[in-house]
Length: 111
Length: 112
Image (tube, rainbow over all chains, first blue to last red):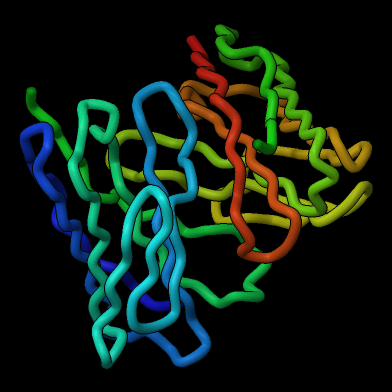
């Protein structure tokens, strides 16, 4: 499974757009990209997944570079509730052995 | 929204004690997982299961047993608890491989 690298922390003010990057230089053609986030005192929660190009849902958007070695999670108009640790996970679609979490990116949001 | 319920939410036990952590999901999910989360390590997979009676070993299984008694229930057993097992434990479930995984709220276990 491809290893991922994320910045350890980021800061933003409410109302700003936050872009969290994830490098996965050894991603295989059969691997997908997943993003989860974890707020304090809760388990991780799924945000979005993608394989290539651009994916958007009601929570976030995900941009994947053409060579698929870099992905960026974009959170528009962050609020205090978006303060969390964001995890980028790269894995096979049919990999049964659970998700492998790294240390993620801690996003702090200030009023 | 899929629900995964863990109990207890907090537990203190002594070294050498016997602890069972419980997890129930009512979403008819096939896969269930036990993770532990420690500062500096992120979440690490202990055991997982893809159906009643099935058990698979995760990345950090030493000192843990698990049992999937029904589709809904997955238990994590620490038969001789040690201080190194002090951690935040999460149970999770998913309908299939790498479909959305739903996590419980966690059980904080302290071994003194």
